[in-house]
Length: 161
Length: 294
Image 1 (cartoon, one colour):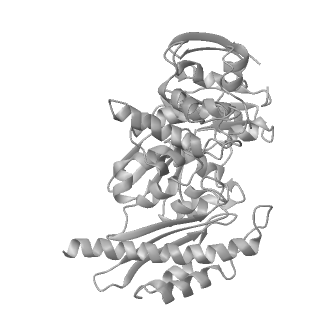
Image 2: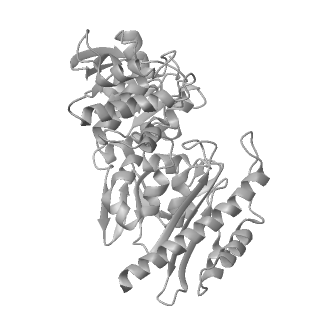
Image 3: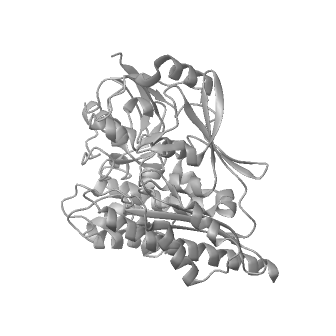
């Protein structure tokens, strides 16, 4: 089968590669580009570990073929923190409030939460739970994940804290 | 590599897509949001030789009102149903049901046409389209036909679509004046596949009598409770009326058993959901009526 060229922007950087059409975007990110922060869990759209932001919207990267991302702008977990020495506010709160245990689901949850806070800067607990319902976590019971997301929103909306 | 090899096509116009469908027929699968097709391909349960990606096709993604009917382009994302002001205004049943489809990450990609063409028994949009009296526009290289939602769903995951045809548009007529709506569903967790679902639209007149009633339940294909709908006309809404209607609508309802739920459980859940759907729709219609009387 003929391979196709894909050009796209990931975390502000241009990437290109030749892919077989059947190659999933998750595998392209991880195996071809070395961006292994995007995790592979169920590989059929259930667990949410592979969640990325495609043109700003959280989507499952295991349900997209890499060839479909031609021309797209993508953000993966590697692009969340502002630089190598500083955490993104969400990452800071997850660290501070124990919003993770094994960390496998964390990249997907952080990107979902990033999109949530962009759309709804001051979400209710119910809204947080609705948004992250598509991301399975088998360690935490979600309690501290919800707390950390709410705390990020609060810190962002109150200038002196 | 998980999916089997395939040839990838990315047409940019509907005509080009139809040409490809005509050329490859049942060797091809149209790819819309991919939220059902790609999992099946990842498991190699489906191995199309050709994948025709509709995501780059211009003029298939829209929500517009034409002569007070809602026209939905087939690749309109499910999330757009939730965010659209016109949907919320006149077809809120569509918005409410969309919120039950998987999760936000799924609805950002999943399309209206894709869900309907996939015709999964527990899916939300099929029973909603039957309830709203929608029509499906099916196109192929050599022509176009319109088919009622009720006739579109043929059997388990099977629609009236021919191998060379594409579902390109869904048309939903204007809602009855002052109608109320309700979407009800039971699943293990929110976002899971529904074990049972019910959709209803009810309208009452100034005397509080029912002038329009629709009720559709999940099954192998959407099950419209036609005789029950007729029995509601001219009646005044009451708990007893809807209880009887729900029982009649579901007493011989055909349901399937699987590891998630038995047929008996699904039937019983449908009875409860049907009653709630009718009662809530009638109540919303009455509220809408009062709002204008004031």
